[in-house]
Length: 128
Image 1 (cartoon, rainbow, N blue to C red):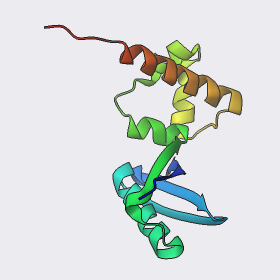
Image 2: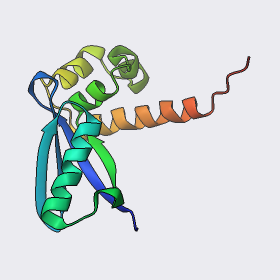
Image 3: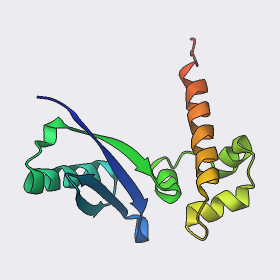
């Protein structure tokens, strides 16, 4: 079975709910859930129901808004990420809370910082 990679946009809703959306064959499919795994399953079910795309053939490429990103990866410290990105921690907290929306430039700065930190972590070796 051939794997189909589909971008899944994940946004934070009210009360820790995550909203997800995919576009497939020019159709927009949306749903909500309490966590990413549940959201993926619900979207896969919609893809099967409306597009006859077999759930096992779908691999999602996650695209998070800032609030959903910090909800999903809640072990990330906002102040530390802001420091590494050269940003004001208070401003990043406002982005995470939804009080303000980042510009495309600010969002890219955060994304690049996260990717750089992840690359550093991939080089780590633990010895015993």
